[in-house]
Image 1 (cartoon, rainbow, N blue to C red):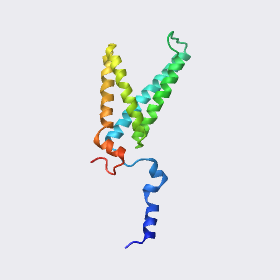
Image 2: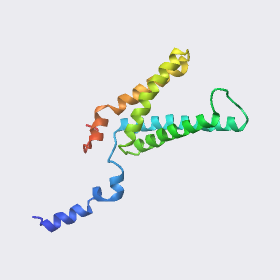
Image 3: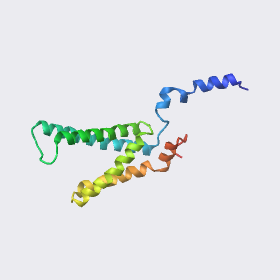
Image 4: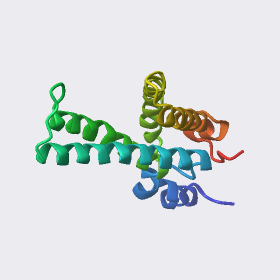
Length: 154
């Protein structure tokens, strides 16, 4: 029979009470890990585009309708956030899911625009990847993990 003092001592030493353990949510399901990896790749692609735009602007390439530096800053900020959200989701942090959801929802109209512009080689894979990530983020194990269930793979 355990005493109240023993129960309190056990609760104080439990791993879930440590600051390190509480910063990462326990055991994200495979769908979350994959969605985080894909979202990270999408963010990385956007950041690479930003770097290319800066290099082009530094090399003297000028556009009449857009600013190379301004577009690079926009890409860097937006897709840098997507990259961070994807990494967070892959690492098991629940807040990364919101960023991944918004990114995928916004990439679907971009894919449609590319499709109607005749760039189907890019549009179709983009739409399929975004839709697949959305399905993963709304799958049963993912939603249970988000709700904090102890065994999300059931």
